[in-house]
Image (cartoon, rainbow, N blue to C red):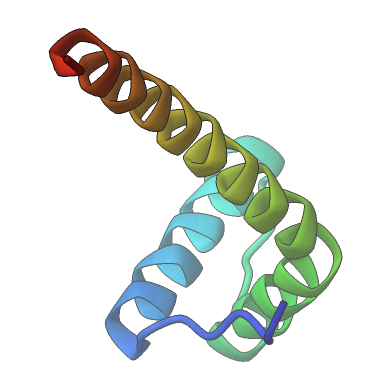
Length: 78
C-alpha cells in the first residue's frame, strides 16, 4: 500500500469537521495546524486498516460478479 494522500479540498473539509467535533463535543478549540496534524496522525494509524477493508470489500464484489459471469457462460455453453 502506498501512502494515503488526500486532495487539498478533501483534507480541508475533514479538518473543519474535526474542528467542529472538538468544539461541540469536547469544548476544545482545535486550530488549523493542530487539526491537520491530528488528521495526519489518524491517517497514519487508522488509514491502513480502512484501506485494507476497502480492498477486501471491493474484492468480494468482484468475486461475486466473476462468479455470476462464470455462471452465465456455463448457461450459454453448448
